[in-house]
Length: 265
Image (cartoon, rainbow, N blue to C red; front, side, top):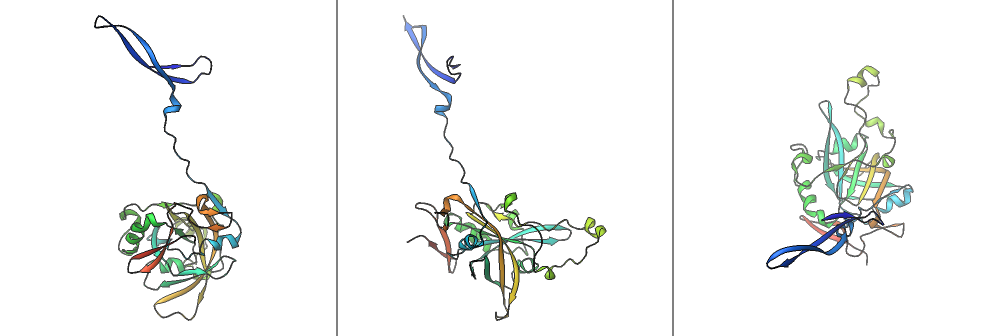
């Protein structure tokens, strides 16, 4: 039965036991009492996200060259449609937040990346390896991945992580209309970058340069990290992106749908 402690106001529950006499219940006595909150299960707090303002620290999220989800938005008729692909051919160019990536020209996401709109990079860990393979095993040209791939969910950045519109690569944007009438009839403002739920680091990037020298089947691009955040349990000593002891590590791609794990030595 339930009750309230007169001295503290705490909610209590008590166990009662019957007192038998001649085979019949003659009375009941309190056999034990406990606080209701003492029995409740303690849920672990979700890890906090740390926003990285220093470009040098943002670059460190890609030091391990992790496999990433690359997320984009592109127009489908008059609405923005989300898409996601996997990417492992990317690396830091410097400590100022510039990233070099190689992207197959046949990728459905290529046009959205080249458009100058922001795109997202999300760093998954080994517990998402099967999801990485599912995403990489189908094309957004033929399926809506976020509607069909089980376990795949999009998440928006926190308000303080979202960069302001505007970029140095706007000449590649498809829309050259700036009239108020056309804007009102259009699909809405440029969408912010978004990310894949369950990952441990998020980077908002935007292409700034196309580099010569790649083969005919690949775009070689330079992108700038405009914003980045990392889960606190994957950020060591305020400067190192790594999986702590016992935590799922990042993935490195070995080829043939096989992954390695990036762990501290």
